[in-house]
Length: 260
Image (cartoon, rainbow, N blue to C red):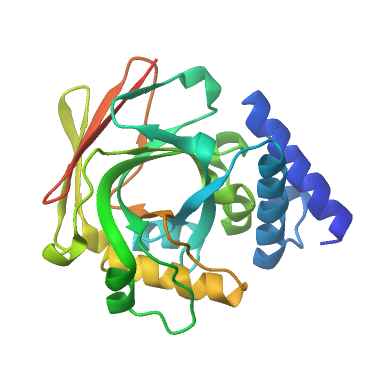
């Protein structure tokens, strides 16, 4: 894609974000869009948000499950940027009308103790660099109409991120087998999904190692204090006004959120 088209695509996504009105699939407009083009659009989108006064507080990893990768015909995850105005505490209420077509995912969030940057980052390096893990919800949303997305569409759209809700416990991950950590997700008091850490690339630790190594290829890395959302442990759950969601992950804790 030409630089002008990349810039205008980022502007269109920003307008869709601010207005909560979706746009048509980007890859339908720009059939030549590559994944590198999509990350360039994402960077311009984030730079615009930073000029509005928000801060980068971490990263999110998407497409960590085999089912999600098969849906978009890819064989590796993608990533997006977490900003300060996306963070919410457990128990928060979210105004449904501020989003387009939100869905909730139960995940394990990592809080970094020190910087981490590839290449060559291993799972052991991730655990050594982690201050602790927390239960979290990622609230995903697509600025693309009807979630009609290809890989390039979700990458450009900051990996379809919207908000994230953190639990109130920070737990040392070295005392837990995160691959075996079981998740229960409840919606309005009923269990709707179960999952385990192994859904995220075999272990959430592997997902964070993948991210650190991938960021290294772009000359970037994880920073001390960053929050890293390591990937969904089950399917996405659509939400509507009045929904109350709670997620519990064994050995880590719980987190809840309400939509109003």
